[in-house]
View 1 (spheres, rainbow, N blue to C red):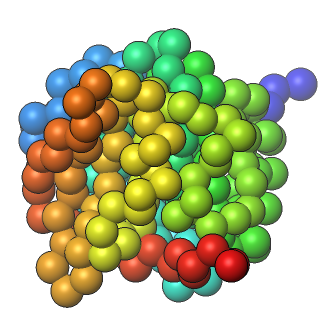
View 2: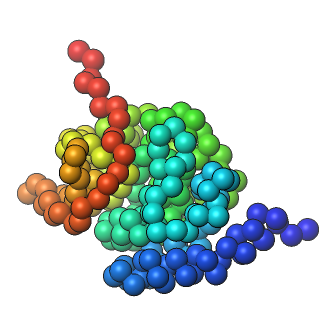
Length: 221
């Protein structure tokens, strides 16, 4: 018997291809692995059913709990910005619906994703498992603390905006590792931080607008 979900995904394939061609590749994202992942991951399954007809539009969409799924171009841009490699171990902070994790999982060896909102984290965990992304591990927690038990990471992607880069995330990058994160309050910029043997190199990539990163309460005495 054929898989109804696979059939649904196939019906959306031409729309995804057009999304990648017109919204992503045309704007300068050229990494073949990123373009392939954006073409194959069934984005419509990562948005609420009421918004599935709009899943491939050039903009963010609500996913509940006051959170959003980022526009396709931003997901592709951030993924390309970490310069992903097949052997990489990647930390994602802000699982949301699980879409960014699925894109990463299509490219790298291991993805560890943290979500502070339990309802979103549990839903994303189930969906990712149902879709066969068995190289993704999701846990509920405060992303400011990272995931020290799985560190160091080759790359870290943060999908919500803190006021500045959480120090513990920097500590969990291996030398040569890349962190891509939106930073700021009223005015936000996407930055990339690369860990070097001598410290950290910081680059500003582009202006963005993300939901604020919550959590980050001080450690208990």
